[in-house]
Length: 292
Image (cartoon, rainbow, N blue to C red; front, side, top):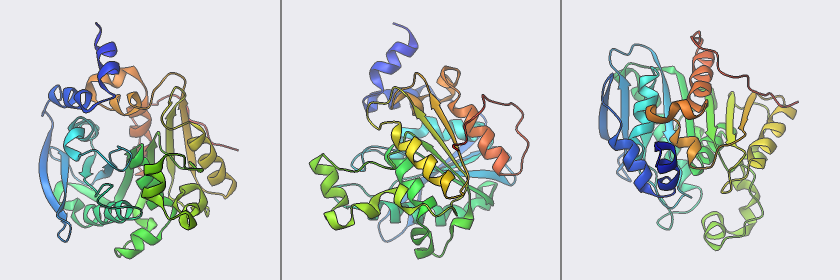
C-alpha cells in the first residue's frame, strides 16, 4: 500500500492525524505547548516558532471537527509545517459542543487572536502580520472573525488587526440545516441567518484566500464559491482555488511536510501570507482566481 493510499484511508479518523504527527520532525522550530490564553475557561494554545524568527508573520490556525470534536494536539503536523515556512503558528483549542453552542466557539477564537496579537513578539512574530486560518469548522471560525467584527471588538481588537484569512474547505453558506446536532449548535432558528459568514459581507473584510477541493463530500465547494462571489460583489478582497481532485480531509493533510508535494495548498498559503505581509514570495504557485 502506498503512503498516499494509507493516509487517505486513515484521515477520516484521528489515527491519520496522529500518524502525521508521529512522522513530523522537530527540526527548525521550537514548540511551546499548553500556553493559557483564557484564564476563565482554561483554554490553551501551542506556539510553533521558527528558530531565530524576527518579525515573522503570525498564523492562528483553528482545527475542524464539526464544532464538537478535535484538539490542538492532533495538529502538530500543521503547526510544524507552518513554522517551517517561516511563520509563527498559534494553534488554540476552543470549547466544543455539547458543552457550548454558537457563538461561544467564535468568542473563544477571538480571545486566541487577541492573545496572539499581544504575544506575537515573544515568539519572534510581528503583530502587524497577523493571519487567521482554519480547516472545516475552523475555517468557519476564522471566516466569522474576518466578516463579523463584533467578535474581535468584544476582546478589544479589530478586523484591522488581520492581514488576511485563509480558509480550507470551510462551511460559509450552509443553510438550511438538516442535521439535528447542527440545528442545536446554531439554534434557535431565529438566529440561523446570523450564523452564516456569507450574511456578514460588507466589503470591509481583510484579504481572504479560500481553498477547497472539488471532491469534498463533507462541505460542498459551493460554500467557497458563494462566499467569494458575495465578497467580490461587495468590493472586498478575495482569492479562490478549487482543486480538481482533493477531498475534505486531504486538503488539510497536505499541509504536512510529508505530503506537501501532493497538492499546492501550502504553496498557495505561503504565497498569500508573504504577499499580504509585504514580503516577496520566493516561489510562484499556480494562479488563483478572483471572482468577477
